Image (tube, rainbow, N blue to C red):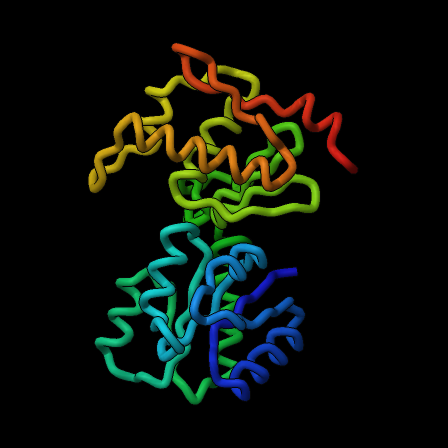
Length: 245
């Protein structure tokens, strides 16, 4: 069942949206902490976010950027602002689509279903939006039962889940493609490198530490071992055998 996270401060609109998500077979939850949304959002690990622009404390553009720094989850803006520039800003800040209020529910549901099909369903492999190359069928990696959803940046171990930042996801992907093997620091630096931000050795160390913490929160302490002078290795066999079912 797909999970929809609704970030809307109007009680009536929020209730209508939640009711309609559930009517169409989705699981839905509504934001309650508008001063700091991310802990609640990451704990829920949604497949799609509905995001208003006019919110308490910070606007939807700000929260869209915060979400994008951590996840590639699809975001559809819902707003009373009908101006062209508002829609441009929504897309430029990381939104996938935009719909104006009053919300035509049939159109909204069609957009939601379309995005979910493209990102997770029948069109995901063809579009490459799931994080893999175009035409690749792979949307999820599995190493010793640890699973990484490449599109959502979601790491899963047994019944626990953690949302990863972009860099954490890139590192996790490197380790999970080579479980039980040494991955050199050079390989990891290359994975983090982009044309916008310079990546140094300290940046790598910080991100490996953060990924280790996420794994520990999932119940996998010491899952990434430092191989002095060589790099790092993902080892989960012992932890898996000792973990609670």
